[in-house]
Length: 455
Image (cartoon, rainbow, N blue to C red):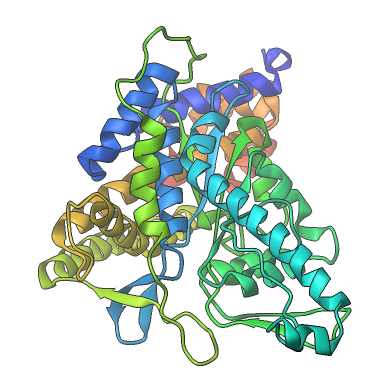
């Protein structure tokens, strides 16, 4: 039996198991009706999976907000809209097109800004060739300033390069990667662990400082804003759990989007009933065009949005309930995920409130109860997705023999029953007991003396 189990079968079995125990798809009802209409239209006419396009649009709203607004919990505790997100699926699952659609307004903005920059840079070079007298005669600054390229998106870039770009675009950036595995694999390409630590700090919007080798100066960013979004194939998921990424909470910071049922895209003869790209552009542009207040050092001063009393009460109630679950949860990995989702819930509140404002459905002076309720439903969705991913990772780490035994074990079993199943699959009693012990809190939970539950 065991020698017939391939790595792909392991993966498929893990996905099927996750699908059976978890709920439905992305709760698009959290969006204003204008955005819901776009999601349904691109799904109907272009075959974009609802979960992928809805999640990518959430990330896009995050980037458009950037450092302009923060959610205020209390004095000294503000949360930004930073998200780290991965669209997970097999090859051909139609992940890239929804991501490209959601991010197109930024691509067009950056393209136009690049054209402006190239023109300004040529003028700058011409000014450098002039004498001081010629510059004075033409009303040009004596010491011409090199132009800055305004942008929202970056791709494959080192922390040092990213810090430089961010110092020129303090409103915020998005690392956009069609293959997110490249982002993770590059963490240790220059020095062991430093890039991973950089992203852990950025997630919490902690001040970052970069010392450039070619200069005596340093780049100091008081409040970084860099969201991350990309796609990843299921079989590469294990790359995220390598090294210290499970222990240091890095993987807990990633929001995973998996389809409940993966199907190949069928082409549709249907034509859109309205210009979906233009409508999305209009909505997102309202956020992208928000003015930023800056201080005397040219640092952005974000506007803070407090919660209404009833919204705050509901958010705290949800957090307390989740904390109670954490106190009873034996799996430390799951506890870590739930703790990060408590922070994400605040960020979701901000993003949803601002999305409603962009669609003229709400104001942006307070985060209200509607946004909190929708943020909670979104947090629950990502909680289930994270559990799916953890199950996949655990089962991918098993040998074919171990997977066969876990698959046959009932949801509740006694020690003797487990030993009998292990022997039937050519595993010695001592080996099985060691396997059971090493996976308590991961695959199994001890319910009472000699009795176990499969997690």
